[in-house]
Image (tube, rainbow, N blue to C red):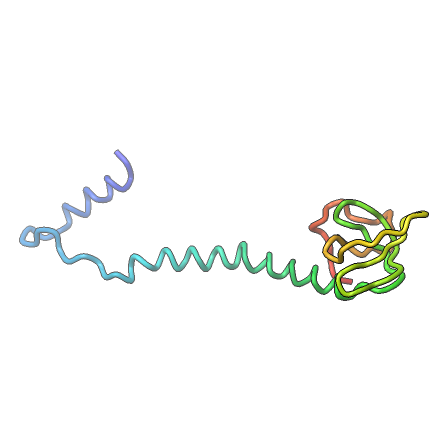
Length: 123
């Protein structure tokens, strides 16, 4: 026997003998769990994701010449030029033009770069 059936069995015994089923509960009582779930999802999933996206956006807007960056594909380079949507980086003897959205993080030293791309923080 499931827990709900067990509780329903006690609820049926508690009903007065003259009332066949009693009045149904108000409609708002059915909406309370749904509203609570939406609030929990907002604070556990949506809000932290928006905060992370805002930090990434600030990081990309704050790129300037001379910053050492790690791209989302793992390329290490130094910024030599910044345009509206692209960044030019120099990695050893190679000069690359990449999208700003490909910049994963700005680091002080390449040896201290965090290997996880989600760990990017605003400078």
